[in-house]
Image 1: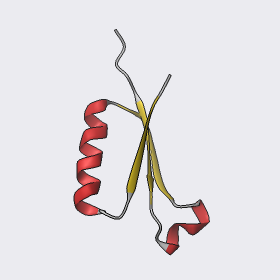
Image 2: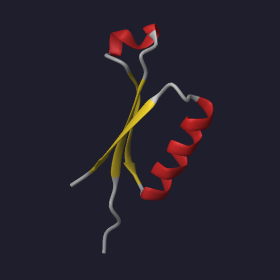
Image 3: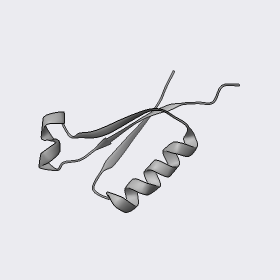
Length: 57
């Protein structure tokens, strides 16, 4: 069975991200393990970011 993959988009209200409509970065083809690690890292390093996770397919 194929593993579920996700697209992760990080957003910020910081002024430097205004030109990208708040998007800081996008990660595609992330596994659940990678999503969990990314969310934990961002919670620690960039607590003002919010993360949207969407299942692919």
